[in-house]
Length: 584
Image (cartoon, rainbow, N blue to C red; front, side):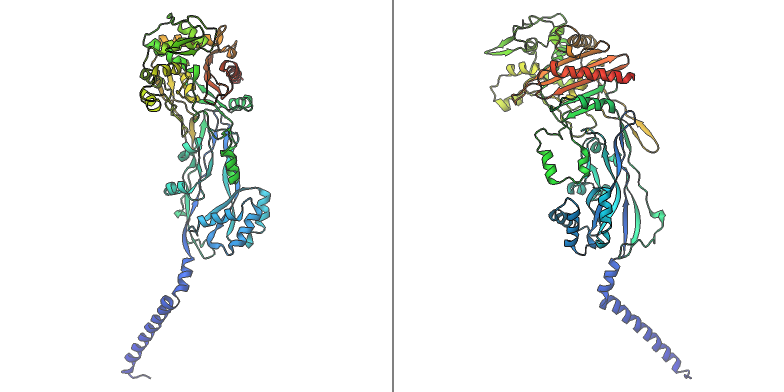
């Protein structure tokens, strides 16, 4: 037994001993074995797992598919789990069309993303997936995931395509929830409506151990579900689109647009040559990409909004309505006699018809497409007047269609001529060329289509658009057309409409190859000279109506010949097909 004096002493020693043990334990944990436990701690993380939204799909005006999502087996690599880089690289290279250098570059470029799964190969076919899955246990850094990729059902330019986000895009958009493995719209509607189509990603909060297993410490109420992307219903008609693609002349480059006169909706949008957008989800190699971009036919060029060309005689209604509005002429006025051309100073400007058209009024000048009438007309206006009126009629400016990268075209100014030809440049000769849509004036096929749609709609110019309405899980929203008024009186508009009707439906009109018995067709031909010295570009633009159905169209073929003999017959087939389609 301890004495009463000894008990406090023993208690004090015990307390000191306990604290000494605690101190030594803490010293061991924090000093002696700190590296060991730091490593263990660093292998247990609270991680945020992104739950990707499903991208909205794209349909035509009758709810038929244009772009869908389809399952894809994708191979990922986790850099922090690589045990033998050479062995992993050899395995991937042996099974896929990737050389070791390409694989090592992917690993190097993502060297700071140790805890991120990095996409290596996408869209693996099922047989290959089964084959490699049997060997995956030997490569803990590799994993297969079933995800969604785009499936483009028809070759075209207007949908654009999606592809892996690049480093510059990732740096720009990572704060919006994009990862280095994300897909992003790279052109067309996919890019223009990226925010709508993409939706909003969700997330899961996970705590994982050193092996990556979910410890399931967090409850589900900390997760945020994704909001799927909005689907798009377009104004496009798949039947018409496919028909036009099927009759497009083989081996020719060009563009055909068909537009609803009353709404501005694009019914068909065909630019040739086109390309298969699905190549971007098939592990496109550098060689394949080089072949596409270096193809002289430029299959990725959207000629409808990115191609700019001299409008040739389809521009003549601009000059005619300018002269009518300024009261320089009226419906009866006849200008200089066409004897095959007209002298301006010491230069002779030829008419396309070398025998000459004689003296014509404006209606017949449009019908026969007499160049001399418009040569003479150009002398009545300054370059600035022609330029301004052209833009007031929505040519050589962007239409505002819901596609990225639309070009505006070009109309030269006096300053431009001085800068390029010197201060003593003669403007008159250039104006003569511009008056018939030649020389430096450039337009897009879409601008011409929208202009002729406005002529058919009594001067109401509607902004062209591809989107008809959007659909989410809970609602749908229709797109309202934007309307402007061309600077042409109704009297002069009627006169111009009659001129375009005569061009197609009266003897010797340049557009008679487009005439139909059961449809009223209005139009204008054009044959644009080009600097390559080949055949002229062939234009035919106009509109057609039968009962309540009314469409505008442009048929444009590069280096194909005369618009009246090449493009007008194609337009005739399109019009006939469309009205039969609408009745069926």
